[in-house]
Length: 351
Ligand SMILES: *Cc1c(COP(=O)(O)O)cnc(C)c1O
Image 1 (tube, rainbow, N blue to C red):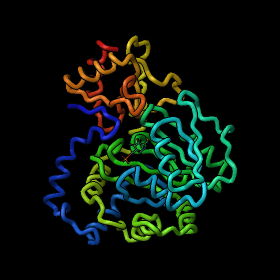
Image 2 (image 1 turned 45 degrees about the vertical axis):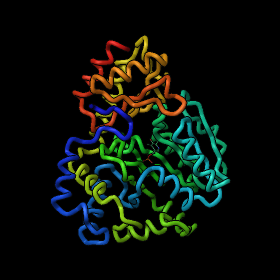
Image 3 (image 1 turned 60 degrees about the vertical axis):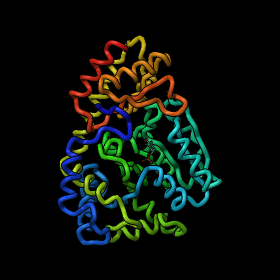
Image 4 (image 1 turned 120 degrees about the vertical axis):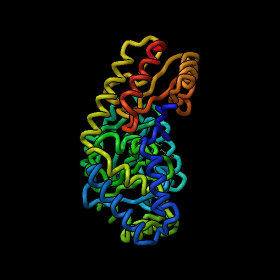
């Protein structure tokens, strides 16, 4: 079965080898306070910086999931208010969780078909601005230029970005915002259970000024431990090891970015003019490069998903309320060109 699910998604073919190596090398029962773990942790952070172009001055932390990052941000980086800009289910869920911890959290939903108009954002002395860079549920993105413009106009606020389904798939300009996070079961091509959180010097300084220490995963503790290349609790050592191995082999981000764009364009062209399966997002300017959403009548959608499965392709279910009328196709780096070709051949009959 070839998985085109946008998370958990197809993993790199080398993963079984890395797991065997980890077993041989004793990594599966490695102590997370040992010198050996520290070496792996340090190497993984330096590879993340090198391969994803993360500025040297930024801090990198390991967490368990993007959802945990939402919570860490709510408890450790927001004291009074946050402003959530979103157009889909993930951004909304992030707002909902934050709102329970921070009553001053504010929602700013916008139309998935329109480009975010930053002149219309009612921002005034905002503490933290939360943006979902790639909305996995509907296949839209807020591009890097917009994120940079929001930061420029609100330089004292922290701009915090959920890049779960785009980090490692497209080039992100980390300098243009303060906090970026992603779990590894999407564009990193790894099994679930690990996430990375990238923090600017400004966000670390702000975290220190709040100095929240009420939780096992308070950012203050995570930061303190990472100064020694360690984690606040026993981490997913195997996940970190596999991340290190995958990154070592990885091409530079500029190369991967070009490939992601070329494939996104190929997919969009493939569905251009299709009668039964249409691109869900009409405005090309806001379409995600890593997650493609198709729409059609519910019978056709469920038939295509079923027949695809019988032919060895796992398509992504529509998310939330979009479930009956859409399906999704991941455009993640671990998917091979030959697999995309095969899926296109299959879909030819039904589009
Ligand atoms: C998948 C996803 C999440 C949730 O990730 P977990 O690792 O399951 O916590 C959050 N935000 C976005 C945009 C996602 O695509």
